[in-house]
Image (cartoon, rainbow, N blue to C red; front, side, top):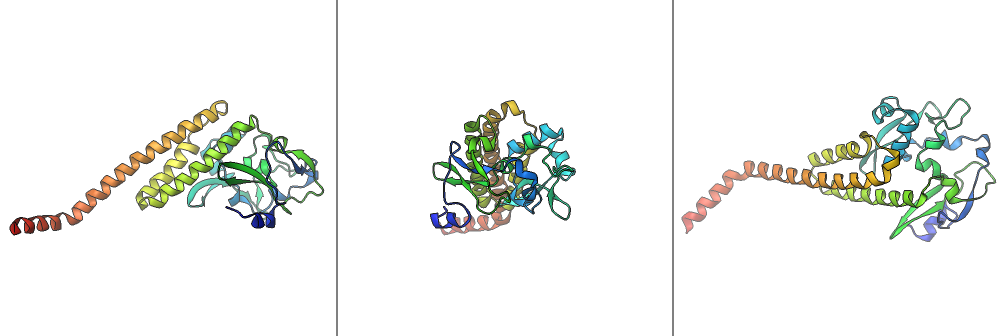
Length: 253
């Protein structure tokens, strides 16, 4: 967990709730697109709701977003997850239009909506932090955080984000204990269950919980199969030795 002194190094030192005001009003970004043209692609990790919104807004499937180089897969804390693909010498976002404005603004990913806010996960919940010296627009006026994020119902979205964060933490623990073969299967399942299959935006928050339960059940099944395979392999490698030990024990009796 971050100490207060560490937090002060890159934020204003405050913890915010959605009902708080913060220095976020960029006045329509005043013609600035610096944050969208920075080399931030690998840090713009996309969660399932982001993909749900992107596929609806663009009319493209997850596969089409990948093959069209709008998004790409990368390793994030040991997990293979999609993130935004930066394009060109300036590493700009592929969704910037000719006027350097966001062409998917209503469906932009959660991290884009937050900036220059960040999320701080602590025991029992989550809060927002305001990063210093990240946004080029100065000065910025006060704005309600709920309005800045612009997702309703926000409480349902926040509950989902916290649940997804915890699920990924659990998935990392599962991978750490898994064999190499099982790790590959778990990585593929994560993409298949939460990204490759389509979503209905209207039922997303209900369906995400169902898919998390599905992923946990699949993990148990794969773990049992992997354990059985490893046991079978061990028996093949050590069966003769076990027979000799058993025979020697019988003779001694």
